[in-house]
Image 1 (spheres, rainbow, N blue to C red):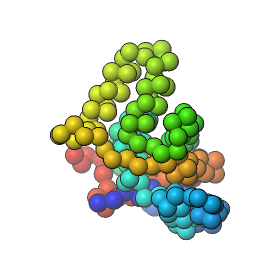
Image 2 (cartoon, rainbow, N blue to C red):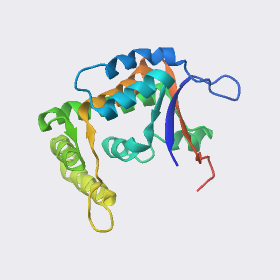
Image 3 (cartoon, helix red, strand yellow):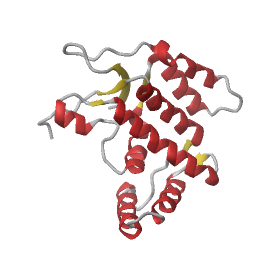
Image 4 (cartoon, rainbow, N blue to C red):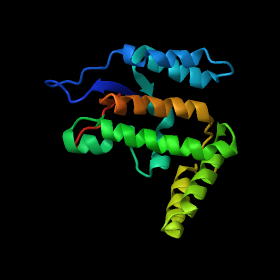
Length: 193
C-alpha cells in the first residue's frame, strides 16, 4: 500500500479534482543534472518533474514527527471534514515551512538525516520554547512510539537536499494556489475506522 501526493487544481470543479499539468513542475528536472546529487534526491525531483506527484509513503513518519500531527500527508483532517483527502494551498505552505525550518536547523549536523539527527535537531528547537519541558516530554513519547518492539529506531536515511526538494514541491503548490490530493490504494474516508 502506498501513498501519492498529487498536485491538483484548487478548488475542485464538479465532483473531481483536476491534476495539475506536469509542466508546472518541469524545472524540478534540472535538479537531476546537478553534480553529486544523491539517487533518492534525483529520483524524487524527476518524479515531480514528470508527474507533479510525490510518492509520500517514505516521508509520512518523518513529516508527522516534524509537524507534530499524525496523518499529515494523508490529509486525514481534510478527509474527516470533506470526505476528500486534500491538503489545501495553506496546508501546503504549512508543510513546506515546517520542512524548510527543519532543514535549516539540520545543516549544522551535516547533510545526512537520520532518526538520531532528527531527534537532536528537534530537541534543540524545542529546548528554547516557552513550554520546553512539556514539549520535550511530548517529543520523547513520539520518538519512543516510532521505535520497534526491541527498542530499535527507524532506519531513516534522507538527505537535506532530498527534503529540500520535498519542501519545494509543497511550496510550489502553495505559491501557485494548487492543492495536494492524498491518493492511496485504500483511501481513508469519513466514517471509516
